[in-house]
Length: 332
Image (cartoon, rainbow, N blue to C red; front, side, top):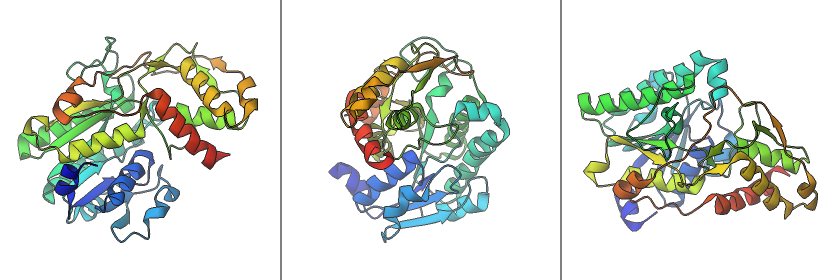
């Protein structure tokens, strides 16, 4: 964090919803490392106590076990809070297809609860996790913030509704928000277990276990994979910007480069082979494409650079090397 950011956040209290999750715990860690007071709200449906274990003895850290679907929990968490980093959500396109009701309850009703609680508590700014899934069936690349298509999954619908609610809360209540459309975030603490695990930790775990990773389709689908440190930087910039033009809009959070799933698996195999030679001989397998998946994803980050001084440090290679090192230490 810069001196300017530290000055703005000095003696302030930041609420991180979903703070025990992958992205949330990395945000908590950065704030605490800079001696900023953090309140974490999490119901541990997908977050893990292990992710925040190191913070529990820190006097600047407060854990509230609660659910954003409960308005009273949201109000309790927002008490005496200056800024909110809202990360709590049920991710995963397949999960939303299997259970659209729960996804909607958490991502829409829970989001609205948090907006109301934050507004009523006098929160200065509400920065929230949006999603690249909002681009839906719009095929043009790179994705620019003001052009979207029709959503392709219940999850995508919920994340777009978040943006609409945020816009209305500014127009109606003069409440300041910034939405961050994450593009395939990866890095330390991302969970490799479970039916809805993200592709990178899942592939890493399979390689470490000497199993063949399975790619949906022929491997030509591509994503703008974004290392967690870039995402943390963007959240801090959104939290502390003094540029009024930068408020009450949405931004792509990505690196701005495309990697196919086959290229990804090949890179992971190469980097993990440095720790275990046997991984170099593991085959990569394929199966049918998954319903609701977007074929290609690539972000324009020009808006974020221009209005929020976003300057991502980690490309896919640098990010994967950091992530692989962390996973090797924690999974093997």
